Length: 558
Image (tube, rainbow, N blue to C red; front, side):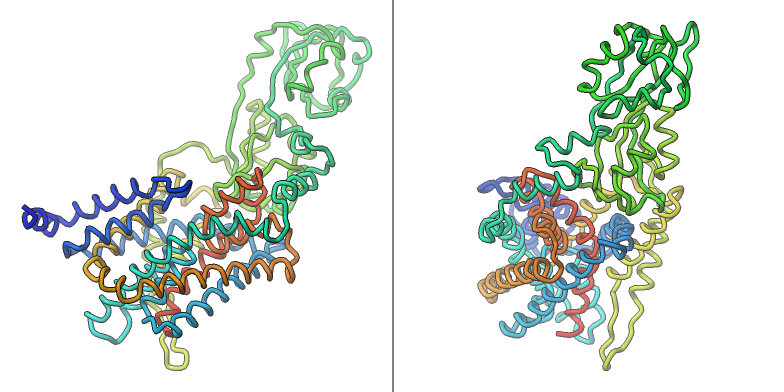
């Protein structure tokens, strides 16, 4: 019976791959003391167990899956990576570079001290700093080593095994670390986050984000003008009578419905269709006149649209500036950066490819879109021409090698495809009419692509896993803990003492530099705020690139 099952999996290895993914995703969702492993670690552990059956896995599947994953990662962070070199982003670049260099130096030192081989050392870095792409770039570099095929297989297996052993503390340990470190440093994360939100909102009140009036959910009401005090006033003068954002969207004058202009004068018996926050419209009847039912006025074609910021004149400006000069009739619902929500505050600085969700009348939204950049309308179409061409060019670029002191230095296929993704993502931000990869497709390429690759790696490494665990499991756990804690403590000290970064932004930035999203989520829960995500996004872009390249570097220099 057992032999039949083993034979079935060996003859049809796709069964083992899909089983590892199914079990891994299930295990990754399980909560243990409020913490879950995540899909990547779950799939790798499942694959290592299933791999005990010595299942042959086609190398082509592993290579293609990794290429799709790493290209899409580069595509997603490309605009932030290049844009982060400007203005305030340069601080986050130096922080990411410092964390990457410290992590690399400590990894090599620990590898020498504990006597780890090249593969184990690369896996130590990948697992401890939770950068799964290190497995791919390390394996790519191993293929170019002048050693036997058996030795290459052993090194590749050791990369995966070391990654699996150290990943758990690299994730769970850092979640706990970032829950405790603010208290150890005497920082009240909630108070600091609220203080920073107030500063960003230009207010000292507790409800400062709400003072950014165009971020409120708009309502639409109609009123008949009977108050003589507003008759003769221009539309602009009338709108300025309210403390928040109130917009006259349409005017019914007699039998006609007209679109108002700022200099248009309000007349007696006009019916005004007004859009604004609920609080602003509470006393509107006292200012204007009685509220009326006016279907011709109320029945306005509204729109809620996600807009990607591409206009270089906007980048570096604040939400408040945009609201004041160009946001008439538009209401901001949310702002996201790399998929992470940011607080709605006046002094939030806009980055290239930030996505603003705005609501309002269709005419106002369309006008605003032309100023902001490119509308992210729902689509299911992926530009596979770009994806295919990008993977080809990246692979060719990764094959190039430069000898330094007799040592061939190369990005490897993984590093080359990552660079290709960065460039194509950046080019799309300049020319948004090509190269679209919708959110759903991005998830498939990154999440499923990575876990297909990880499943293949785990199945191949499975037969050697128990021996490697017995031989170096304990020392790897200790080395991983040292690497994680030393790197993040050093990064926090550098950020506070040298770069002078606000602690809430610094902690978020450190989770980005270490590419550990679970720790960011812990920070957002502890601070009860989205502010840590501001520091996270740029560092995440840099961290993905720097740490991924280290996989190849370690194999070549150890």
